[in-house]
Image (cartoon, rainbow, N blue to C red):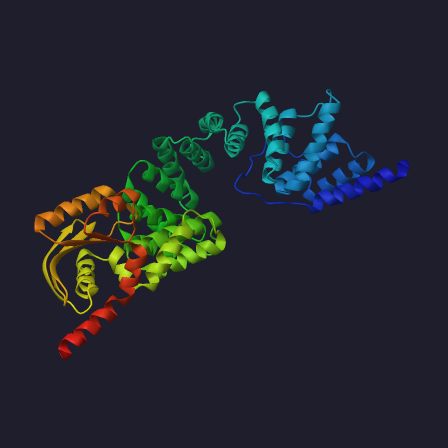
Length: 465
């Protein structure tokens, strides 16, 4: 049985030699007493000696130290991590081991960090910190882990300590800036991020965060400049387009916002939440530009991704009808001049076989238009006042009451009140004993569908007469 031990040890060493993983940005510095045990010997000679020792005893401290040093210096992080993990077990089992506890914990932690084993790295660094709390490697990497764990205040304390040992280390400045940003301390964040970018100008993520700082500090032009610069970037471009477009939307620069969102949606591998938000905002911009067809295209895409996203279902229901009825679009969304021209058509075609002469038109902001007309039919003649209400929703008694007052002022014999919405019960009761007809959306939609044809027919008939 004991003869099997060397075989197991040899297999373990071979596995350790073949494993190695390269990680993110932490290039560890050699620990103080972590020097190679085989000073003066070649790498292969040291490894042969370490293998020989471990064949005889898998827990031989000298053999583990020699192997661990090779793996660590060569960046074979998985092998280094397992080797220093074995050394930590020896330290725990034998307090009189004589090993350098600080270096073993530090290298164990930094190897774990390279493998993204944050809890193990935190444990090793915490132990190393209790032994030597003024070490750059310990304070910087422990600060980085605290940042990853969202303990931003603690991260800042450790990173500030690391700056004492190395004031110009880009990673320290970078993580400090991002930590202050997470705490919404934008002035401090900007200061550190600028310093970090002076040393590492290709850090696009930090550049994006700097733009966010400017945005939060209401320095909009500086933020926009960075966002627009980042629009083509494969990693940060989609997010930058979303932010730039949102700023332009807020400042009513719809065409620029549309450009931002369209560029953003051409990026590959967009995060799902960014993509759907960008599509929603792009649809909103199209609607504000009265481009319903394009808006519906985006809304249908969103519905296919998430049928319950915001008010997409309601918007599709509303604007699909508008898209199918050009006159309804004009009635609800067009500029005032186009709206009034459409209302004139309705007045002229409202009474079949009647002679109609419009005598006055008045517009109340963009809410409604009043048109007074002389109507002469084979059976009666009178002044008729038409009110066309653009506001959607329920029209209450106050608006109808005011309309009735206006009828009396102009001595109109009849009133026609037309809305793209509906009327409340109070409004209906008010008109029961008065010469006011209330027309709601359904009837208005039918009128708008047929108004052009009716007007053409009446005009042709008038010419024949």
